[in-house]
Length: 78
Image 1 (spheres, rainbow, N blue to C red):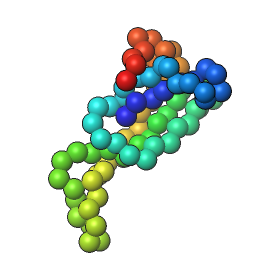
Image 2: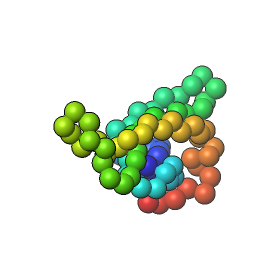
Image 3: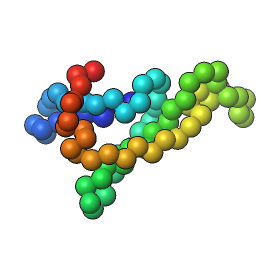
Image 4: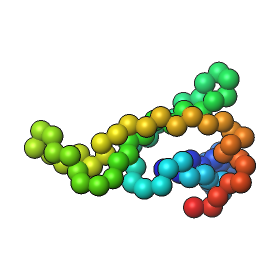
């Protein structure tokens, strides 16, 4: 899961930071009044879990918390 930031209205996304390596799926972002950013996402690896006759590869929900300063420091270019 990589979080990226754009400073030009979404035309480019040059700054990104790896939150978690490996597979991930649907995610959602929210910003709290104090500037803390929350990212809720699906993740998991390994053999899929079978439920209701379907394979569910992403078996966990993870909530990451960070701030804008963390995202901007030592930014990677994934």
